[in-house]
Amino acid sequence: KAGVTQTPRYLIKTRGQQVTLSCSPISGHRSVSWYQQTPGQGLQFLFEYFSETQRNKGNFPGRFSGRQFSNSRSEMNVSTLELGDSALYLCASSDGQPNEKLFFGSGTQLSVL
Amino acid sequence: DQQVKQNSPSLSVQEGRISILNCDYTNSMFDYFLWYKKYPAEGPTFLISISSIKDKNEDGRFTVFLNKSAKHLSLHIVPSQPGDSAVYFCAADPEVNQGGKLIFGQGTELSVKP
Image (tube, each protein chain N blue to C red):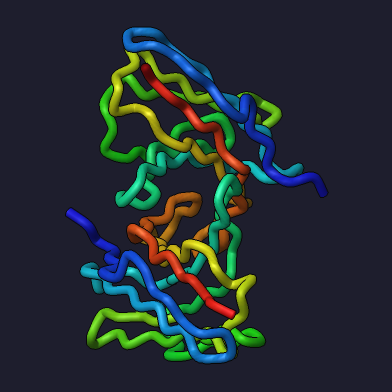
């Protein structure tokens, strides 16, 4: 099976712009979750989608949004970018059941100038 | 408020010796814990997990210990190898009836020196 695929790999944006990141989960996985990684902060949970519905949400402002399509692919959008949004954004997929491991993509490195 | 904490940002160990990475959590309702390893420019990869009904789980060179009364878990790597040099994240599954969400610690960067 192919792994979790995230595009693009790198992005450079300026403050005030918006950005869309894409994630293709492992075939058959119905859950896609998104995380933000910044130095010293670990991985912060953004949200999780299961069968096209947002099932869990972290403590991020409304500028961060996402969606999931019927083929389980997911997109994450950040509007009105701020310098502090510079981070590695990681997507993970799973069957969406309790107590199971997540499979991560390589991430999208976003730099906001 | 950090529910999962890894208080050591870095750890340096000699090749062949034991590496011990520590993790503390605050919520006694957490019932499943995982360790992930992350190399630069790659996503985290799953290493080992443990359910709260156990106090130890072993997989080859990797062993995770869970002390529920102390809300503490540790990852032991024996013997340590240079290829183990990476950032290690501990994570907890906070939801009883749902999946897809993990709470991660800040990570510990392990350096194994030849």
